[in-house]
Amino acid sequence: MEALLGIVSSVNGVLWGPPMLLLILGTGLFLTIGMRFITLRKIGYAFGQLFRGRKSTPQEGDISPFNALMTSLSATVGTGNIAGVATAIAIGGPGALFWMWCTALVGMATKYAEAVLAVNYREIDEDGRHVGGPMYYIKNGLGQRWLWLGTAFALFGGLAGFGIGNLVQANSVADVLQQSYQVPKGVTGIAMAILAGLVIIGGLRRIASVAGKLVPVMALAYLGFGLWVLIIHFSAIPEAIALVLRSAFTGHAAGGGFAGASIWLAIRMGVARGVFSNEAGLGSAPIAHAAAKTDSPVRQGTIAMLGTFIDTLVLCSVTGLAILLTGVWDSGATGAPLAAAAFGSAMPIGKHVVSIGLAVFAFTTILGWSYYSERCLEFLFGVKVIMPFRLVWIAVIPLGAIWKLNFVWGVADMLNGLMAVPNLLALLLLSPVVFRLTRAYFSPAQSPGQP
Image 1 (tube, rainbow, N blue to C red):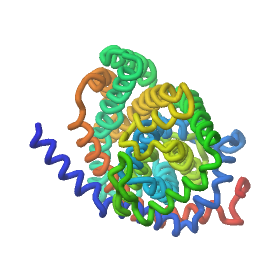
Image 2 (cartoon, rainbow, N blue to C red):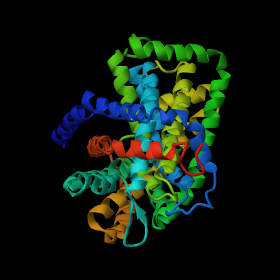
Image 3 (tube, rainbow, N blue to C red):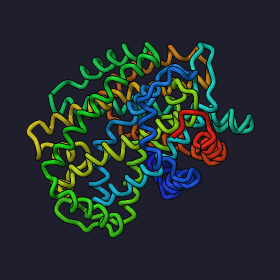
Image 4 (cartoon, rainbow, N blue to C red):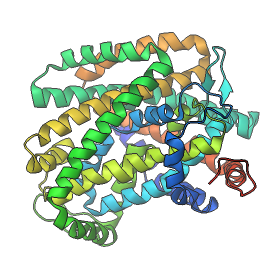
């Protein structure tokens, strides 16, 4: 096992090295410029579309645009927003937060393009459901000679879900509940399996319904507590932001329990943890957005890009600034304990905010990723695989709660990287389609409903 873990670690060192980070950032920047910064200029319009009804316009799809966004957020808002941000700062220094912001700004264009293509090239399966995602826009947009690339994405996505979307999430919940409340891991695993089963067996509509209620409540609650930490330390915010900017371009020397970080380490941790948090470029979120009730790929694309905005530029920023403002960032702690220390220093219930937030966010990730993996496996094997998959997915949850998962974490990172490669290549090859649809939609001569 040690030898196998070493091989996986070596592969990840290459897979998540400078070329991958450059490909992710480069693709996002290319799309941002190619669309003339539409993702930044149309933030207000995107929020308007999210909450505006379109009952008078013919629509196709299975779930509302809002619930499609909540389903995708259920899979992304999780450990990355708390433990991931804390780890990035603990290893890469305060400057890592700046590079997370940069990743999110260009990642909005990536997420937008993914959703546009997912809706534009989606299909209806044998059971009448709207299905889409990278495997479908590769097959239908690039043609049969590229089908192998879509198949590769579906294979990696179907397998990756069991790691990053199931086992490691169940393990995270079990760990935090045991450490904070002495709940046995086995009990947590069985309880999660039962709760997840009640939702997952009902399919996308039930997942979307639960996500549409649970994700906004928990995200707003966490945001509210985080903003309280910022308010308490309001006068120190300008200096904290200055520290982030200085460290982003000069690195940060060792001090306290902090080991020091170079500029490159700040960039690497900021980009890697930013991608882990918002999943822009991995190709997961468009699988949910492909099922949205909408009459326009571009309209859903503007809603999809809000996922990256909310996940990283809002929630991750609150976590990161709380850690910096409370002065615990160089204490030597990392991960969730570092975030808990920040919140705990500002309020008596800070530890509980982080513990409960982690548990609920990780649980919703299990729900969201179950849908992603299900669609990937359906692409490979057809609708007959759906119910067996759901049963296996539920049965695996208790195992994740009790296993030691160092190896699973490594494999999950590797599969996520392998998912990203075909998706990013498809986005670059299909970028002319995204640019054309965007220009047509926002053209002054376009039909009513445009800004």
